[in-house]
Image (cartoon, rainbow, N blue to C red; front, top):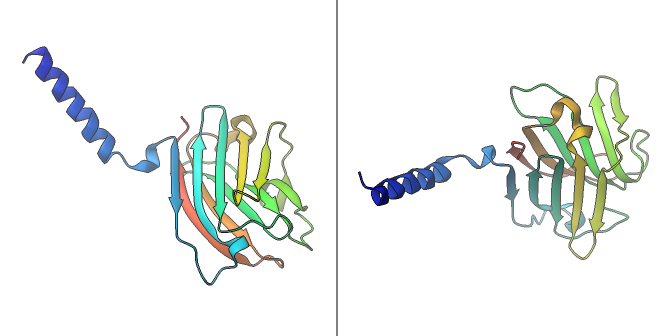
Length: 175
């Protein structure tokens, strides 16, 4: 086989491998849906994008609209199937009357006793009214045993704690 043919064969195998490799094995992933008439725009999740970098997990939640004082949107970060580790809830909360969740940025670990706040320098939750988005960035070191391949779901809640919309899961390995 000549070098040219070998190069073409290798390129073809790599291209086919890239096409048949499930997106869930990539270091980035996303899922989306059109707006839902039955969900208030400020709670309607349109997309969930995850970038699982070597040092940082970045999650982008896009909504139909964003109302800073009325939107509660979270990413639920859990170890992928077959792995052990805690589950985390990270996002933006405007819930009233929830003793374990303060209003504003939220980073908590779910354990047997409920929700435990996580102190993680470098963790950021930013909102964009113009972009109707909640952007989450968490250093991998703060995820402990969960760091690595993760499963991420998105959730919005209404005051009183009722789920309004959910999206996901997106399973991504660490890049």
